[in-house]
Image (cartoon, rainbow over all chains, first blue to last red):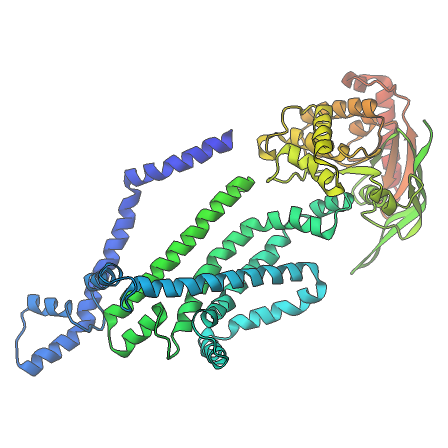
Length: 306
Length: 259
């Protein structure tokens, strides 16, 4: 009863917080960020505008000077409204099958991210199960898993792409492998911890019922590990997205947000770079949110929600 | 009624630790008969829990013989000879009370209909009828511990091993549960092994009290209770009860004078 009452209050609290000024601090922070961004944009683009003016011999008033710094075609730092316009054009201004559409590039990245996340999660869980149940694996596997993460992914990604390409495999799979490389680790660490959460007493109870190892796993270890699984899935999916984008950077890739970043930097299209960056950030945020939702639903159903 | 179910003959158990061997049990001789309510009492480190765990095959004696129903403890466990109750209820938060009680039954392969019937019966036995659909967090600590006793009873083991089952509960709840446990024992005729820190609890519940002392863990005294089978709570004010409690306390002091 008490718990439910607290839960109810928590739900209502969000609305009340929003009404009583919880939104205000958030908006204030956002406003400050945008303002700092504008000031930075003026500052960083000033040199170019000054050079142009000097070359043409024009003398700029302050107002005109600022206007020019914020409307350059290829600014060093695009202003927020330029990025917004670029985003809008990329998302809504193109057919979604167009090579200029951020929706299309986003989908290419998303599909490889999800595939890599799936592979990585499965690998992480399987390795964790092995580590928890097998002493030899426990002592031999973890150092390798840690080593795999200390090698810079930027160094590995091109090798993976090249190796797969030489076997005639391009597109989604090699990128998914790179994404899996990054995302298996948090799942592995979280699940090893999670599968080991049952107390000695609960394991003793299982023993007193002569439970088989499989029964112990499915009925005790796995359900106990759920909170840990979801916490690590959130890290893993963000890592999978980073891995996919890195996998799209090596030369030759023509689709995906990573390719969009790369071609933007080739041609000095900073607005394109920033638009792709924001799309990637939104994608990551959405995915983490989705896992969080899944987590809440599952844990509440299991009666494990805190 | 004097058919022996648990027999210990010179049982010893030594743990190998980094600081050298620890003698958790040494030369323990004890026979527990069918239907006995035997309490083990002593300071921490006296081996009472270890002995109970050895009976349950959760520890293996390093010397001597220990048999349960004439079998070695491991075989007895597979024959479902006993149910074990720990200090904490250890209920799964993701299962209802009925689901928790049916867990060992699922593991042992009872049919669905049989499980439902047994869960209903043991819930009734521990006075939790109607609470089967609740989740553990919706129940008080005392009710949770009753549910864990029901879980230990569900598969009809003849022996109930309880390791300080009420140690974490307050005294009022504890009194009520002690009374309920005696009723349950009278109704089912189980053999009960009960580890406790509390002299009144041991005296109130038991037909026999085993006093133990540490370093090495051993039995110093076995006291047969002269109290009648029917025990209302106010039996604790009778001279017999007080005399028995005194004898247990003497036994505990005797054990301590060694160090």
